[in-house]
Image 1 (cartoon, helix red, strand yellow):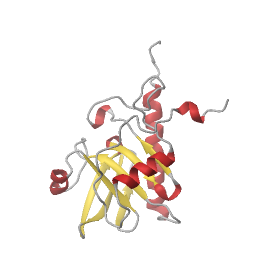
Image 2 (cartoon, one colour):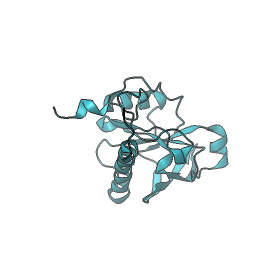
Image 3 (tube, helix red, strand yellow):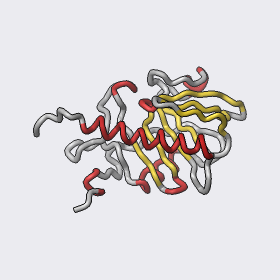
Image 4 (cartoon, helix red, strand yellow):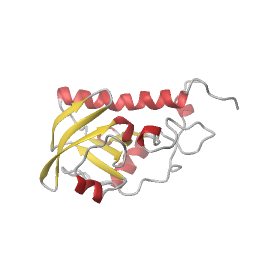
Length: 180
């Protein structure tokens, strides 16, 4: 196989993180409507993640937040977002760069994305896995929603995620979505 000089994996990864950025921008402007709810999982040890120290101590690897009922002051920039949430009935402000994201799901409409660790977020390969590369970055919406529901109980307060599902569990390639 020849070398990818264009960097398709990085282009796709950037585009998919852009989907998350646009979704967050819309709810920052318009609020959540209908059955939408966002489960956002991120690496707590990534550069630029700003969370209270007790949360970093409790969740040294990953944290899943739920944007549904109890969130305030959502601000979205080109590189990340910040929001105030209730953790154990105490309001806290957090900031998360998009490079730190590992999963994003909206179980209300059975939509989800999973990201590989990017170089800025602690090493690893960025982007979507190719068919020859088993760890995938995109799952089916149903599989992602199922993983998210298993990792966190739907509730008003954010919760920590359990260990991430195996990377090869219920994986699809982008070929499944191409027109023939």
